[in-house]
Each structure stands twice: as C-alpha cells, then as structure tokens.
Image (cartoon, rainbow, N blue to C red; front, top):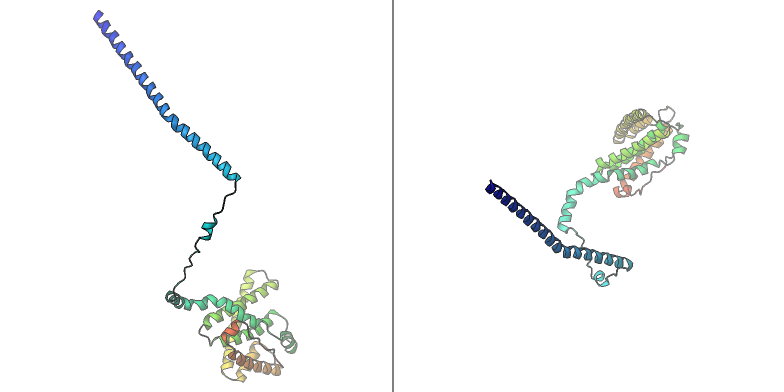
Length: 268
C-alpha cells in the first residue's frame, strides 16, 4: 500500500513539473516574439510619420515644373497609310461612297426643285389652281421629274434619285402634319396615295419626253391641268419643260450638287 501511494505521488510530481516547464517555455516564446516584433512595429510607425510629414510639406509647396523634360518631349507620331494601302482602301470603298452620300446629295437636288419660281403668279393665278396640298404636290412632281431625268445620265443615278425622292416625300409628310393631321394612319395612307400619283406622273412624263410634244402636252394635261380651257397654259408648260431639260443637260452633276442651278419661271 505504501509503495502504491509513493508511485502515485511521484507521478503527480512529474506531471506538475512538466506543466510548469511547458508554461515557462510558452512565456519565453511570447516574450521573445514581442521583443522581435518591437523594432518592426517601431519602424512602421516611424515610416508612417515620415510619409505624413512629407505629404503635408508637399501640399504647402507648389510642384516645380521640369522645363528641360517638357522641352525635350518628342511629338506624338501620326500614323498615316502609305499611298499603296490608301489607294487600295479608296478602291475598296469607292462603290459604297455614292450610297453614303445619297441622302445629302438628294437634299441638295431637292432644294433646287423646291424653289418652284413663279408658283403664285403662274400656277395659282394664271392656271387658276387651288392653293392646296395636291396642287403643291403636282407642280413639285414636275420639277422633281425633270431633275430625275437629268440624274439618270449619271452612273450613280440609282442612289441619287432615291435620295431625291426621300427628301421630296419627307417634305410632303411635313406639310401633311402642318395642315393639322395628327393621326399616323391617315398620314401613311395619304403618302401611299401620293406615291401612286407620283409614279403615274413620272411614267406619263417619261413617255411624253421620249415621244413628241403632243404626247408630253397630254401628260401635262392629265396630271397638272385637268381642265379643257387650259390649252395656252399647257403649251407654255411643254415649252418650259423642253427648255429646262436642255439647261439641265448643260449643267454638270457637281454643279447640281453644289446648287449652282436654278429653274426659270414659266412664262405664259
């Protein structure tokens, strides 16, 4: 019994010695790590203080400009295609250029047609036509057709004529809305009717221009002056159309695009 107690007491003493030894080792390691980290913490705090001091001093003083570097700075390089590649790109994009310019060219051509000189004196007073949207559209169709007949001689006539027609019907839509019509359905139906009328006018005037003055006068009578007592006015319009087509034929496409042409008024 005594021996067993002695063994138990010995085991407890050994366990207590191990516990104290472990505790002492942990305390020593913690103290060592604190001592090792102290210079690093102190170094970081000193570095931050120096940075703050630098920032405060630099904010008070204006930054100096280094003129030598600014003077010695090289200009930026501009990258320009060589003539060989530039000519290749021009040839590649040449077919698309008329399509790209068609809307602006169409606006310029329609500007010449929209002037309609002598509209009040001849078309309204002499021909006794009412001042309505239909009268404006019929007379403007004659000027647009003459311009289209001239543009057909150009290789890019398809794009230019389409731009001209787009500008013409855009103006017609604006006039329809200005007359007080707000419904989009009514506007679209009116534009469809005007388009059908315009196609018929163009076809009849083309036939008259290619045939004779009698056929041309008949086309003018059907589309512009549907009255029986307008023989002299129809003859004046036929002579006017022939003279203006001859003047347009002498004018180049570039002059027309630059708006260096003006229609003459119709003389009775």
